[in-house]
Length: 498
Image (cartoon, rainbow, N blue to C red; front, side, top):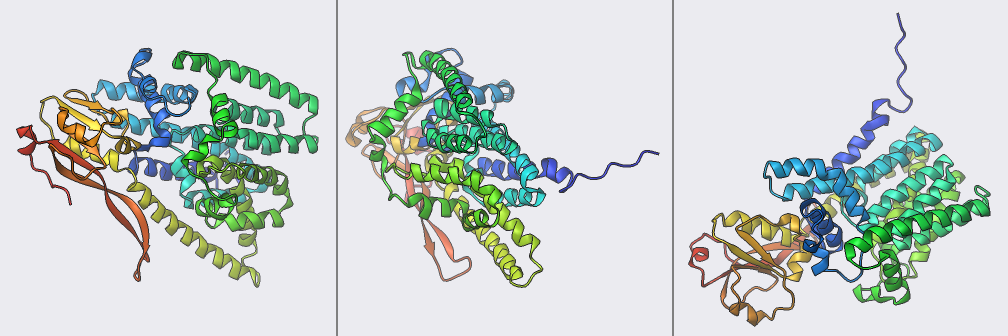
């Protein structure tokens, strides 16, 4: 009689796919509960929509009418469109609203991001053990931003998948593959990944993991292939010879015009962005470098990446989100050491404090999610308008810039009889002369229109002397207006505006 195979060390099925199912469930929950997208995601989400719904009719694509500040590559949009197209095709056959295609796209991107995170997790287990792997997953799960962003169609997230892949190659010892993954990320998706490629490449050279000649040959060949591919695809889509990330590099680094979108102090990443995004893992990752020297050669180049990025005045968390997985690996080593020594005097108190910090992190992530949930008033306003007016009469909706930037995309639009306009820079007094049926904008009152309802959005977090001690303050952000010359609108039941 054959003997049963022993369970794999570290939890069998849980260690195989259970961890991925847990992270995937959390990421899917975020995507379903906050399905709309904001202005930073607008290019890719509109590009994916147009690829899926307009296919080769490039003249109908949104980017030709609203090109944005700098051009972006279509390659990420093509990849996600191809992967999600079978499901979207079925949804179109069933005449399901396009909103569910948006959910499909978001979940597809999340699967790609989490698959890259799985590859990294497997290498963490092989190099540092199953306990480090388990704490790596737990720390990732109780943080908000990494999983929330995992389904958001940003160039940073496309690059993040490649950075996770590079980290997994790095731990595995496939050093040339590490360089190739980072070069693709830098040349195609985010030129600022050069700041990560540089320190990692230098570390590989100094440790003699690769020779200088090997590195030069690898970097030049991969760079040329990537440039050729992105120039070919994007020149067709943008209808001019173009390497998008070179223009982004010129705009951000040479012209330094990104500062027009706000600046932060040089220490902001270390004193605000990383503490808020990593929470308990932030102090743990620092201790990890002291407790386990094996992580230092990996963590130090990533630390240098954040230091170098701090020189740019315009700062956002998404710019350095690629550093968080590696910092989480270091934090998992500290958590694993505390767990292993939890029965020793002194260590037991530290272990209890760590568990308490885990709960605090979970509570903070919950509050942050609730704030983000209420951060898309434009999307909720358009959805409410669609639900309120079910007549077959043709309707024209004007969507202002704020509404479009706070949740509205082409995936949110319905078919006939609904029509939409995003015409910009219309003076407020001009609307009375226009024949729009509805307006969605940030103005409480407009001549010739009646305010039908308002949608609240997140304003701030307020401390309260009760349990829980934090509460969200919301205020009206987007107002829906109906044309007073249309009696059919006034005959409907509207809640009115505060």
